[in-house]
Image (cartoon, rainbow, N blue to C red; front, side, top):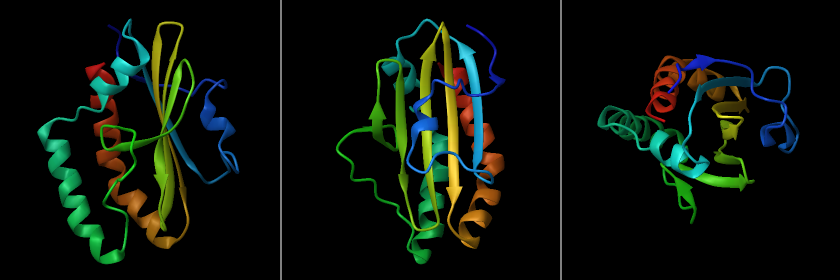
Length: 149
């Protein structure tokens, strides 16, 4: 399998068709690797997080509960921690909207490549601070997830 690399999200991604679209100031990143795994299998494998990520998520939930942020995902269809928002034959869109930010994750399989992209739109100062605080963990977690595929 290929190396994990930062790259641009292909323009065919459903992320570009989200309501209100990707705007200047939104956070977007994308990592890719080559794989022969089917889309669903790749996503399930990527989002089967190791214990250290699950521990970080539990800590996150403890820390943000006093601020009224969403810590319970009740969506009937999830992959890992994340609710499924949309799907096509070659892409899954996961994510949710909260009072501090909205986020979406794209898992796109195209021409032997798997792309994992994250889009975040902050809604207030707390959202900007939250994004800044989690960024080092985000990069580590996403690169690790793509590597597992």
